[in-house]
Image (cartoon, rainbow, N blue to C red; front, side, top):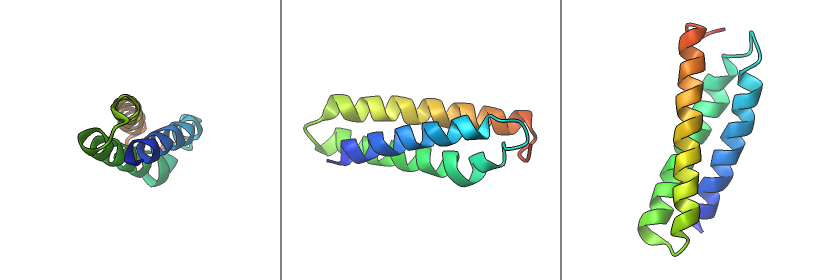
Length: 82
């Protein structure tokens, strides 16, 4: 169950990242993408270590790490505000 929650947060943070890629809306990544991807990573990791749905948990971890890396890269390009 935790794996599914983590996958949900991973996809949600991916949607927020798409909005944050629009010029002058990069600051949205601080509020939405980064925290949601950290939550997705935490829930997915907890689901992998405890649950039966390990493949879904690993997929949630991969998506969360990718979204987190892209969001941080986007924030670095805009100096954290653009």
